[in-house]
Amino acid sequence: MKTLKLSVIAAAVLAAASFSQLAQAEVSANFGATSNYLWRGVTQSGNAPSLSGGLDYSNESGMYAGTWVGTIDWTDETSDAKGAEVDLYLGYGGEAGDFGYDVGYIYYLYPATGYEDSNFGELYFNGSYADFGFGVAYTVNSDVDNDAAFGTGDMYYNVSYGIDLPNEFALAFTVGFYDFDSTESDDDYSHLQIDLTKGDFTFTISKAEEGNLSGDDTNYVVSWGASF
Image 1 (tube, helix red, strand yellow):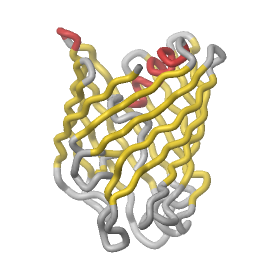
Image 2 (cartoon, one colour):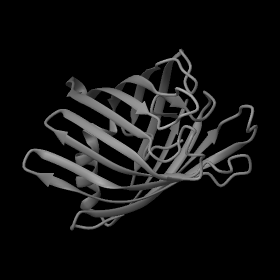
Image 3 (cartoon, helix red, strand yellow):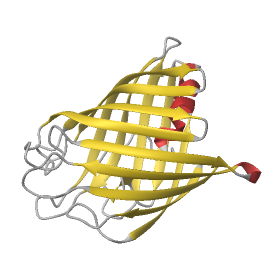
Image 4 (cartoon, helix red, strand yellow):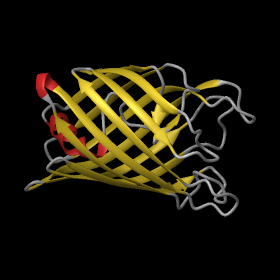
């Protein structure tokens, strides 16, 4: 489920920098591949490889819009088919002194058979200051039952810290917490992610708190992404 770009590490801490790059070109495209598509600490590809691609538009005012498509596999008791996640987003970003900000709306669409009633939309805010980042997302509309996870009213929070290393390596640490507005079960969980990046490649170590939506395995993932 759900990410703007597979190849971006610690999205919150890099949000302002990513937007600044987009603002210099009106249109950009991206393509990526990963050994395991993780979103907020949980696999969306059945612990298998996933491909993705996207297209972004931005202008000097700070406004941007885009779409992203990734392959997914939610094989379980309700779905046994592979499918696709289609993200549609619109937002505004910029800087105020040393503070970077990015605010917008994203809609997660699942058009494949077996993924009915899974679509939902979020309002999000990401900020950055120096090497620190933080973000929050709030589910404002959803096809999912409001008494279940991913219904309206869910909140996701994250904080991150990034470090530049020698030889053009970068290291990022992210901690996230998903607070579901669900009365039927206790699906809330936290997760920790470490990303080591060099060039277009990222090595990820991710661990989510064991729960109804996440396992207790530590995930090791290799990803590649490029934009043009």
